[in-house]
Amino acid sequence: MPCQSSDELKALVKEARPYTKNGKVADYIPALGKENPNDLSVAIYYPDGQCISAGEIDKKFTLQSVSKVISLALVLMDRGQGYVFERVGMEPTGDPFNSIIKLETAAPGKPLNPMINAGALVVTHMIKGNSVQERFQRLLSFIQEMTNDPTVTYSEEVARSEFETAYLNRALCYFMKQYNFINEDVELLMDLYTKQCAIEMNCLDLSRIGMVFAMDGLDPLSGKQIMPIDVARICKTFMVTCGMYNASGEFAIKIGLPAKSGVSGGIMGTVSGRFGIGIFGPALDEKGNSIGGMKLLELLSKKYGLSLF
Image (cartoon, rainbow, N blue to C red; front, side, top):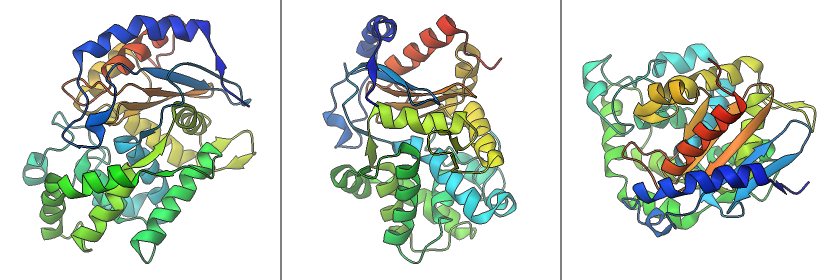
């Protein structure tokens, strides 16, 4: 079913778009630096298959950190909660998403949560398979199932760009390898992780993934339970406590939804039992969140009373 253009959403995009002027694109990843900072789009996907949208919704973007929630769901299904949380913590952090400091000062080498880069690298390390290709294909197939789109793939250009510049992520990996939280070749893990972050889709696809999380892992259109209820619940809880980097507390107060952002400007939101939200706005604030996207979610939450709290 095609996504219907919505006048109400258009009005909210128009109101939020001026905020994009206060942000900047993530040019430290060269391929992401090419995006148009004025772009802003939103799609809302309902359990009955209806979808409404506004803005540049056909524009494709890479998941970046939004992929962390999805890889966590896959690994919880692969390994179980006990195994996963022995190796990565559950606590929010006030530090930037790429910080190394808590790896030294908390339980040495154990990342605080799966939504910061250190934790996400450990989670990706846990994806089962005998090769990078097999592990990546399992994650991609899982995402294709949630989007109901077998054509979803990754951007080789963005993956290569990230692989070539990922010095800090390599440093995190080597630090954690010292403490046996990672025990594979770091270059192989970086290959897998940068491909994961470069998986590419549009707002409609992202809102459909958000809808599956909103429905506790059930795809009501196929009738398939794509992930167990408790896995969806854990992922949504991390989205509330850690999903918006070190702005998660402020986000919970202002907007109050489970959401996960990425430095490409994507944000996936869920309104439990009701719908999924996909947003794209590549101009970022200083914490790495889409500045127009955050404003758009704030307007949506206020207008429709969406806060969990």
